[in-house]
Image (tube, rainbow, N blue to C red; front, side):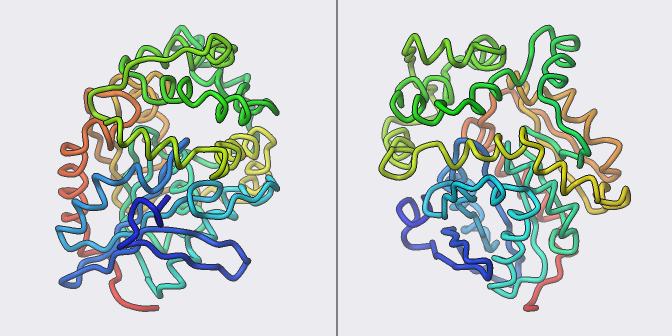
Length: 339
């Protein structure tokens, strides 16, 4: 959580709707713009640690929230709060609080979905978009997880999102927090193929937990970093329930209800866009991410890195340089100044 991981550069703000967000906040230098970092599941602002310190040194401003349900931010139980429209309004509210007109932005995993809705609901606030691992997610009038798993089974030979059923189950949060060693082994596997065989197929995630599987850490994450992760997702700090509510809201079609009213022109991204894919991610399969984005992002640059899902951790230096090059190129388009 931001207040614990980054006590010298974090702040807390209560928005007009009563929701409190905890986030990293660094003022820019030399008239550079802010970069907004949106994390995924199960994560927090802590998973941007390599990017936060890197861009702080380069003079960019940084806003990296613990998103709703995570870290030091509120964790409401009502699924309505986890609608992507509501949360995109929250992010705009944070920018309003600091009187920031426009930012550069990067999302990973569910953060990419939220960044997608920023493009749909608040496009005037983002000058350039960077999607890591998971690409732009266009609005949908209907959402059917079984149809998605059937489609990926046909295209890839396996269902890529079978784990959604486990995450939607009423006992998943309890199982995950009571078996943190297994959660770590599944979320941060040393071998990315663990995801292919024990996360993606329907029923495989529950079986992984039932066997109380554990495993070695990958070389790119340290025991002390895992200790911080375990603290962030401990039962005392709310566990995984808030993060799982993002899945439950989507499966419950709460987002589809909002998105069916978006006009087609709001589906398009009209600003420069970057997609950084992960060659060994069996959920965010690179070819499928690019294929999904091309019709909606006309000014699209694509980079592929040889790594698993946690690209910003496993390939931190490469990601930092790719992002810097992209943002340096487009920082001049940002409307710098106060509202």
